[in-house]
Image (cartoon, rainbow, N blue to C red; front, side):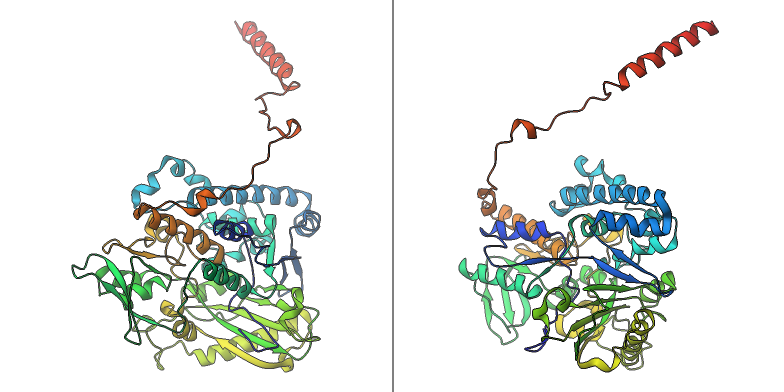
Length: 512
C-alpha cells in the first residue's frame, strides 16, 4: 500500500522462519533467488525503548547480546540467557516437526505417541512470562523476552510458553525484509501461479459457498455479481469465522465460533515523512511502564491501554526504495482490543464505550509523545500524509471477525485439535487455510498450514504430491563430516567412576 513515492506493508515488516518461504518456492519448482526475491537481514532485530530512558538491542549477534544482558544481569545472566535459548530452541524444533507439518483432524491426533511424549517439553500449560521468569531475574529482561507474544495476538501472561519459539527464530535465524516489501513475495507467488496455469479473479467478492443438492458437499461459489463458479474443491482463505457465519448456512457451530476468544486488533498508522528520522532503526518497540496493566486493558477490557506499548517500523531504513530520497516511511502498530458490541463486531454502535475516533486520537498522541520523550525527536510536524487502519476498517476491508487481526486466540484450548479443522466436518470438498485454522496465525505459519491443507486435499483425491518428486540435491558426506556417536562416559570420566565405585565398596565393607 502507499503512493508512488512512499511504500508500506499492511502489518509488521518482519519476515521470520525464512526456510518456510524457501520451502514454499521449492515445492512449486523454483526458488526465492530464481524469482528475484531478495531478503535483507535486519540488524539489530529491534531497538527496545523503555520509559526510564534506557534501551535494549535484540540481535542475532552473540557478542552484542552478551554485552546487553550482562549490563543488567551480570555474567550469570548470560548463562541463563543461553538456557532460555536452549528451551526456546526445543520449543521451535518440536513445534516445526510435530505441529506445523502435521494435521490435527481430531482429538485422537493429539494422542499420537510422537507428539504426546513431547507435550510437557513444550510447556503449553505455563505462560511465556512465567517461563521467561525462570531464566531472567530482572523485570526489564522478562519484558524484553516476552513482548513477542503480541505476534500471536495474546498477552505474555496468558500465551502458552511454547511460543517462545518466536523469540528463538528471531535470535537464531534473524529478522528479514524482502526488498520491495512483503508484496514482492506475494507477487512472486502470483507470477509462479500464472506460469503453472492459475487464473486469478480479482475484485470478485464471494457471496455464498454453493452446496450440492443433497447438502453434503461444496460444489462452487456464487459471486456478488450473481455469477456462479463451479468447482471440484472449494478452498476458503477468508477469515474462518466470517466464512462460517456469512458464506455458509447458519449452524450452531458457526455461532459457537463467534463466541470463542479472539486475538487483539490494532490501530495502525502509515506516515509519509517529510524527512529522515535517523534516531529510529528499522524495528522499534516502545514498551509501556505499566506492562501488565497495558495487556489487561487490551485483552480484558478490549480497549486501548492508558499507556500503550507499540511497534514502530521504518522500512526505508533497510530498503531505501520504500521512501523518496531524504525521507522516511513509518508504520506504527498500536495493539488494542477487538470490536465489542451487542452484535459481536458486526457493525459499530455509536453508543458503545469503544469510541474509536477518540481512541485513534489518543493513540496518535501517545506515539508522538512517547517518541519525543524517549528519543528526543519531534515527529508530530513531520507527517505529510497519514493513512489509518482501525478495528472497524480491519473488519470492513478484510472481513476479519470483530476486527481481530490475528484470528482466533491461540490459548491451549484454541490450538491443535481444538482449533477449527482444515476440512469442514459436515460438507465434503470444503477446506480452509489461514489464521483461524490449524496451525495458526502469522505469514510463515499460514504458509506451513497451506501445505498441510494441500496435502489433505491431494490425499482425499488420491493424487500424488508434486513436491515429493522434487528433492534437494544430496551430497555424499566426507569422512571428516560423518556424525559420530558419543559414549555415555568419556575416557577421562570412566576411571573416575571406577575409583568412586571402589571407594563405595570399601566403605560398605568397612561398615560391615
